[in-house]
Length: 268
Image (cartoon, rainbow, N blue to C red; front, top):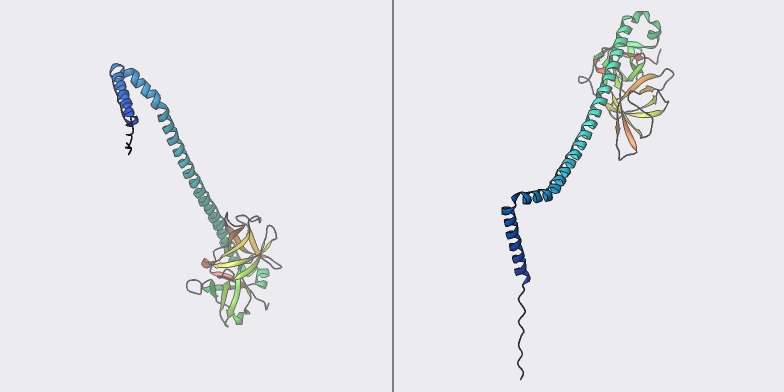
């Protein structure tokens, strides 16, 4: 019988060689650092400097990117603030003009027979929050020639709503801006006809194609033989994900601080 012997594998010297190489390199570097400290420092700096420069460049780039986005956000927010301030100033200018006009109308009322021929002046008895939302109670009614459906104006060229119902001595006025009510209006600058949706508080909105020519301050008028202002654009919302934009309008003048309004009686 033949005997079989397993050959022993040769010992792996690669690990030992690595240890020897690292040890020798360490000894050489230690001796070089001891004998030639300035030269070793110079070499170390030369090797490390590109790494330091790369790290600083990367850090500066990241800071610049961060600052860029922060600056962009600040510009966007500031732009929106300026748009809102501009819209607010335009509305205040309109309010001032309307109040001035109304004051002059009341002062000269007796001498304005053309105005009296078409309108009945009335005093506002109640307004929100003391009356229903977006409604007014006025001191003229059936006995004064007022009836349901009569148009109601803030001045002789600004329309605000219609008479909803009347008693002999008073009437309830519903504003066109009453929630979810709809009213047809014409963009005075272009002649485009749109249907405005009431939002309450003398406000409207309407959705239109994104490319439609409508800008801040545009005036919409009530379609009739003698058009009257119905709403002024004070904000435009554009959604980048939609092909439409939302236009927000407000009835010119401050309805809820007005003491007098005018009714165009159908019986006259």
